[in-house]
Length: 407
Image (cartoon, rainbow, N blue to C red; front, side):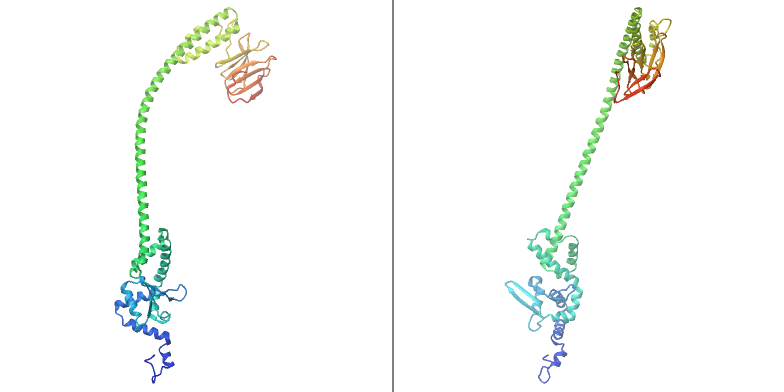
């Protein structure tokens, strides 16, 4: 304005021509910046963008920066730009060892085109840097607790800025980002070590299981050989027992046949019939072991009245063993058999008078009531009351869950 005086007067026209205060300050900033060296111009960009607080949807404003945010070379340039001859910055020292710097006027932000271009280019970085400084304040307020460090996507973003803009980050900012990286790498190493321990434990367990399986296989082979030998010995023992039982069964059959002959001689036909049937049953069991006994049994039993012949009292009609016989109060004979039937006998002829079918299993027991009612019990779990006139079940009683051995 002094250079634009007319007749030694400062005029309003001249004031407007230089752009008033804002325009004059912007032109002054261009002149000062133009006199800097290339390296100083690079430094100046770093210094000026740090002295502007970037607006997020709002206007940019001045920001007070501390001495600790600049390295020695940048702070030397700050002091040069705050010199009375240039006067673009203001420095202060509100506390001992706590110097600060700021822009001399908001007009630099609003009207200096060079600074506006720098801010537009660096806005994303500066917005992130301001958020980072808030994170650092919280971290320091929490006594540098690891939980307050960056992690995940924010840490990855910070790592990228650290690589690209290291010169524009101060020592505290670099230390904070590196602490997050170190903590992340440490946790990753711990997880990998834990994974390796788990893998080794799994491999050890698999090896132990394989060794156990091989030992069990060897034991199994020994057990099979022992079982085979034991089975052979058991078969031999069973054979010996069966042979002994066979001998005992045969002896018992012959004894019963002999007794039947004696009772027949005494004309005790009822007892003779029972003894003869029992003897035949024992011979049938023994014959399952030795077929050669068939002729022997026929020869022995032919000496007792087992078949009807003349006045003999023998009864043949069932196709399997007879388990039970009973006389009615009026002298009628009934028998129950393994063939599932009950037979009412004609005791004069020794022939079946009536065959009663109704059970689905062996008839284990037959009995007469005092008034002549016939009942039978079976291993099918039922009791049948019979109508002896029709030969049909009069009533089937179901309730047992197992054999009915007695009625």
